[in-house]
Length: 259
Image (cartoon, rainbow, N blue to C red; front, side, top):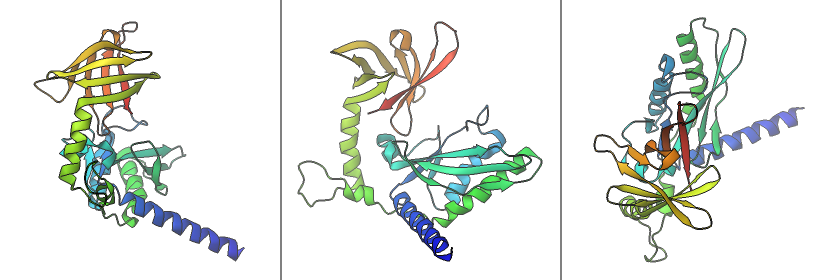
């Protein structure tokens, strides 16, 4: 029995070390402005508290909609996506903190934070702070390994590029042509002076519309038949489109997933 317990402790410790090492590869954390278990943005200021606690424990955290750093705008995979999960419980508020990479892979899950407070806001805050004890225990320290491993074609084989050079190369690639997957169909955004031309790629490319850069915000006005509406690029370079469903006359949100 003691041997099994010892092996279990060693295994858990190894997993924590691996998670810590991998998390140190990421430069930023992006926190959503609402969680799925609430209807509304930043209810009880729990999203703001999440961002605050990540910053408190050494991360550079931003909330969805913040003005992101230029390198994050270019490459959303520099950030981990934060999420908070709620578990059902009688008279107990239970929360866990998750971190995912840009491919949706979970790289960290905290222990369960609990609170028996009767008032909602204190209960959620206490449970979240309890869950963040594991985040604190990561002792996060960005190591820049992802930056060091990126090489630009044409340089010497052993040459390591700076973050600025890497950003220029990525910017050039991203701004010219971007491929997305939506409803099992490939869409291609091609950069133009006004914004983007949008093509549907099936047997051949077919122009379906255009996206015009707004002069008063960072959003785009999309004119593409049933896919017309307003859109923007999130931290992972996905394109988020808000439009009116012509059948229900309700606003729907579509995600064009970056390929």
